[in-house]
Amino acid sequence: MQAGRTATQDRIVETADRLFYERGYDHTSFADIADEVGLSRGNFYYHFKTKDDILTAVIAHRSRKTQQMLAAWADHAADPAGRIRQFIGMLTMNAARIRRHGCPVGTLCTELAKLEHPALPQASQLFTLFRQWLAQQFAQLGYALEADALAMHLLGRSQGIATLASAFNDEAYIQQEVMQLNQWLAQLPPPSGK
Amino acid sequence: MQAGRTATQDRIVETADRLFYERGYDHTSFADIADEVGLSRGNFYYHFKTKDDILTAVIAHRSRKTQQMLAAWADHAADPAGRIRQFIGMLTMNAARIRRHGCPVGTLCTELAKLEHPALPQASQLFTLFRQWLAQQFAQLGYALEADALAMHLLGRSQGIATLASAFNDEAYIQQEVMQLNQWLAQLPPPSGK
DNA sequence: GTCTATACCCAGATAGAC
DNA sequence: GTCTATCTGGGTATAGAC
Image (cartoon, rainbow over all chains, first blue to last red; front, side, top):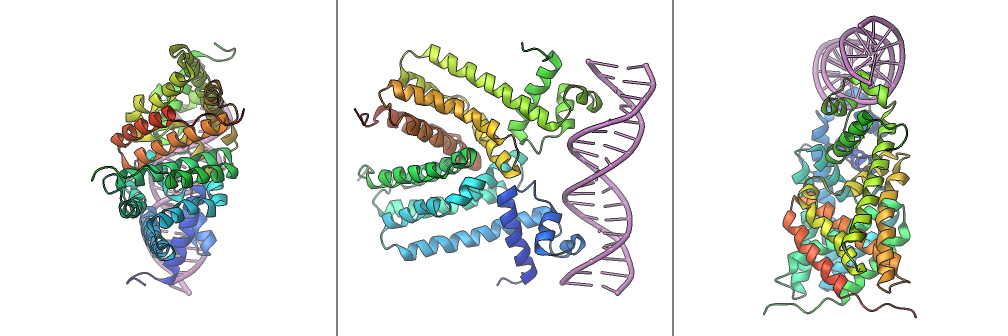
């Protein structure tokens, strides 16, 4: 555990993380979080001074969780293609949640962009974690030159799937597109350049 | 003009349309809209009783605009493939706005889903307009059986592009993916079925 | 149709007792 | 660390004069 982080703060951050995902950042009030954690509104401010502080903590928490997940994927699959399939499999695994609330990263970035919130770059960094990890896998597949573009392409495809699945409340569409993503990966044209 | 709609109401709806897109629905207040239109808060309620009423009017307004746009595309391009390229070209044409605020339809649906707002199905209908129009074009290209899946695929790709362009504030990425979309369209495998 | 004034509520945030 | 009580601001919405 990091210096300065207490058990109560962790509970607040985990609850806020979930509520920001389910209801959105702006639409989640201090009272909502405090109620779910079981704290009074007044006590809440002992742990976090402002709402932006909670957002910062939530993004940092998501960043740690993401890095752990990426490391676990790297352990579970020996080859780069298998690792990329782990990423794609995330859509299947979280299909129910995605159908209801979209992608946690994408919807947060979308909201912060509208709010012109200064934390948008930090939130986008969550995308960057996936982007760099995916680019690394594509590079190991031999696509050195186009690794980043391939990573962005795959990220974009995933985002579109999440957005439409949520708008249409349609889980079957996710599975249909996941199949196409795996086909796309299996049939990538050979690497360009030397 | 429809019965019951006045010039002032139209000005309100057009301003609300823009502000909902730029700032989000929940984050846009009556005062914001009234200020930009040049009305007092009190007078505002003469034209619209509740915020939901404005949202309903904005969605209806967008629906009319979308149907006009789709009809115009159908006029500008004689063949179905050209019409689909008009859809893809929308990403290029609106690249600057998309980079800043995402897709108007996608971001609205994302927000309404989080708010569990009863107008989400109406907002999703805006997607359906594109979906059915695109499916029609793919059917005319001979893809009768997979027309809807192709339409959803293209819609999803566009949504992902808009989401990432906005998160990374990156317009070049839009152009890069638009090129890939046009390639995808040109190199579609031949229709299945008989 | 347009205005001012105001009611009312809920949000973020603070003070101070325990 | 936790609580109750409170301040302040902004939001939706209404009443009533002009």
